[in-house]
Amino acid sequence: MSFNPTAVETVTVDSYETLVDPSAVEATLAKYVDEESITSISNHWRARSLMYTMVGNFTDTYQPFYEMNRDALQHALESHGIDLPTETIDGILSTYHDLDPFDDVQSGLEALTDAGYSVYVLSNGNPEMLESMIDTAEIEDIVADTISAHEIQRFKPAVEIYRHAADRTGTPIESIAHIAGPSFDVQGAMHAGMQGV
Image (cartoon, rainbow, N blue to C red; front, side, top):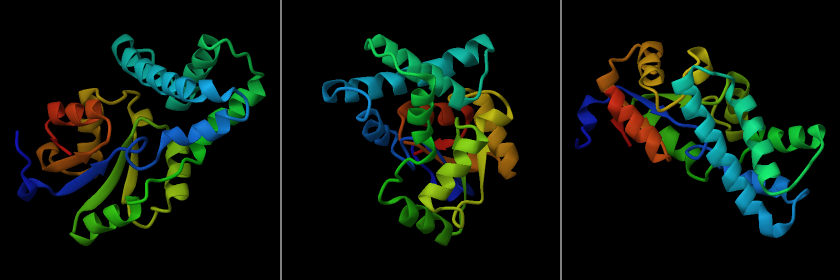
């Protein structure tokens, strides 16, 4: 399906890997693990976290994304033979409350709002994570609101989260363009009836 800009009334935007960069956790990991393992642990952590959300959707075993992230970090560390105290793991995990935004985030979102679109963040992150992300990225005056998977306890790319976004924004689903870095999120949005970018 080709993109049809004339159909778009509302824009939803993914958070992690789209607005903010999760690889920033590597600087925090560097305080506790050897340099050769940092990227491997970070990638394992992210991949495991996403796997948990998708499996959780199919097995109805929801827990907030922050807690799934904790479990994924624990697994990544254990898989690399690293045993850290709980308070250290909590400190590493808290990096998710202070991730760096990508350089073009503010200007890109402002261009959308200047063009007359309402912009919402649609994320697997739980509300506390999204609140800190909005503050850190300094986009609270740009986005209309955040929509969290926590509200319906279903993670992207489940159809329900995109339908929920349509309900929350008061926009027909076919009139929403969803912007995301991860391809599974774009595909999920399109499968639900949105346009994907």
